[in-house]
Amino acid sequence: MGPPDMVRLVISDVAIVVVFAQSMPLDEARRLAKQRGLPGEVVLIWLDDEGRMQFLAPPHQQRFLQSLNYDQLRALEQS
Image (cartoon, rainbow, N blue to C red; front, side, top):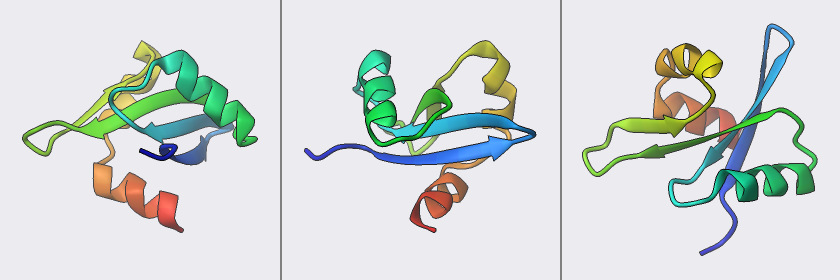
């Protein structure tokens, strides 16, 4: 399996690096984001077995992430 896809979002001067991966330690995701030159707070996002978006993020980012959907984030990653 190759490296995970990532997208960097900046909302109101707050940078978030979305890593599309479920089974990756957060420290590893942070290292890869830094290696790719993507500064910001790293969050993991994935689809569960029933197609619902799940994430691992600090509490202060969770409400924002709940307002998004997975396909929107993927579209940003591909643009």
